[in-house]
Image 1: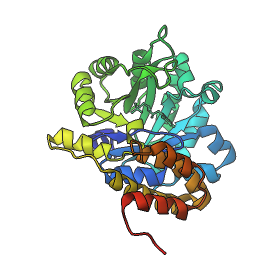
Image 2: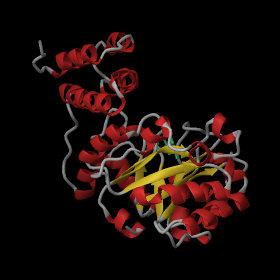
Image 3: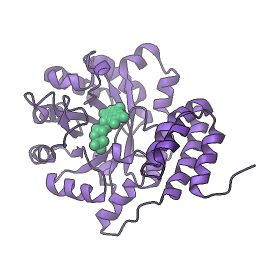
Image 4: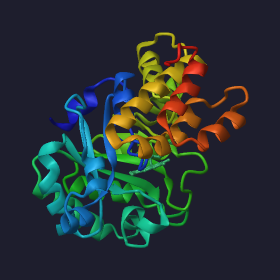
Length: 323
Ligand SMILES: Cc1cc2nc3c(=O)[nH]c(=O)nc-3n(C[C@H](O)[C@H](O)[C@H](O)COP(=O)(O)O)c2cc1C
């Protein structure tokens, strides 16, 4: 599948989010209109040195209906990145290289956004990965390291020259992490100056934002991260906006009902204990804005059994409870 085909699907892509965008969550986003998705980031070195352990297996799990799906790799060693991509590429529609993760534990090893400070190495990594696989290779990067080093456009050009099929620009610096406004003008500049597609990312929270980012930046695609947490309907909202159709947000009972499905899918995917722990965060997101939210979140955060969480959600959803 080439990058034009992937980006020709209407709507927004689901951004990679470690600890959030596992297979169950991606399936719900897809059902509600996500055009494509990217896995959580996977350590290329971990895979090449340690093989496919349980944690890697969870990141690599995909449902056959999930297409197009990109695998995101992080690492700073060109040949290790290329080897990981070679081993896994047949299982995904494209490979995405992480050059944007700001987390200290990632950048201290020279990975993620640290590569914004090493443009030559960044170019070499992209070149080797492109050489290693027949599928499209995309690069996800930031506006720069900090305000004094905003070299995002230079990195975009390097990615293009190294053979990347597209770039996703999260238009914030590493220093900003997730705070402050994303600079959609910078996405526009990248879209105007590059010949490969530019995917805009950062602060797209609803259909209106999607239209204004696409209008302002003139980019080829958009990617949504945090706004999908507890709200996979954001993709339907965006599709409605693109089609000029009205959009009705889900009610609290509808949100609780989807959270029950999410919980059941998570239990089947990762086992009850781990699923309930992971679903505490998701449930708080689904129920954002509910009356007595703080009390409900406190109750949820003490739960370890799926049946207790399900019963609470069923009560909120107004559906009959079992037994
Ligand atoms: C919890 C969390 C985990 C993330 N994990 C990744 C990741 O694994 N790889 C990546 O490239 N970006 C990651 N990101 C960044 C998002 O993909 C996205 O670029 C960022 O959140 C900005 O988009 P948004 O404003 O739509 O959320 C993560 C963001 C969050 C909030």
